[in-house]
Image (cartoon, rainbow, N blue to C red):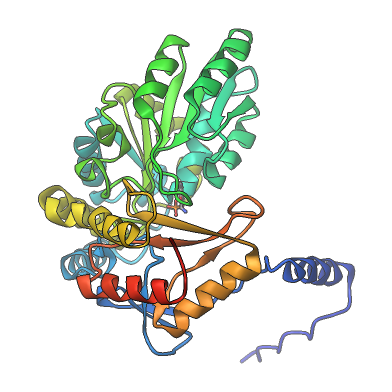
Length: 396
Ligand code: PMP
């Protein structure tokens, strides 16, 4: 039998030197990121690096469905029936029957003709955008859109103009100035902004898009299952019929993994035949698809659960004198990276996990704690979090 060789010790070379230099400069700015082992259980208890459990107010598991027994059972049943992996891309042989059921369920929830499921939300955006617009076209996007939208925009090679965050007037100015010089036009926003917790003015943007023959895409990663009765940002803002492209993820409130686009049948047919990140990647493991299906069923049928994260976020914000949120996300801007990390550490010593978000995820000087609330949080968890934040002088 051949012996497995030990890895070579790190060799002094220009590649490693480059990496070490880059890491050192990030470290100096408190911007280096590190992975810790986290194990999650019910009621948002999280053990970090094997330590005593912390209550997590930092997850995107807004409904606690990732640990819901029925969702776990559905994942197991799907794996039992269809295997651990899809075996190939969907257009080859990886399109197990649960996919179609899931797409039909998403389309029904979103009120569209059809839907396409991708490997992740990130893959959805990098596939959808270049399929719909190209070099001759225009993209008008909110300056705070998620990084995977930026990736999709770059891949499309379209001309891009960013409008000030949620500023419909600025978007109108950009359209007036640039629309005529281009062929197709896509407007792109996040339905809910994950670092600020605010909602895009979709009705106003949708009407604007219609007036300029532009297509509005809303990224509902943080909106599905949390607002609009669980149906997302279009329904929450009364913008039905004005958002022809509703994309999102199955990894946050749905508690599983995967991404989707809900749209008209012709658009979905085009995406499935042209979007590279749909075609050239292996299908999702059946367990992820089975879990999503069950989770969406729970979202449809339990409005009390769907309403709870926003309710808890409002209780927390009111107690700390912060503006009332319309989503489960409450940001607390601290300022410097070091201060935000210090506040996060202080919360950890009190039994809470709340991540400090720093540049480049948020703009320089706005490092922040991002509190996110879940239906799985107990009232007592929120009450204690409020007491601890007050003791630490956070908020107000
Ligand atoms: N869009 C937004 C707004 C997100 O916050 C995220 C996840 N952080 C994504 C897309 C990517 O989704 P996924 O995790 O499924 O790749």
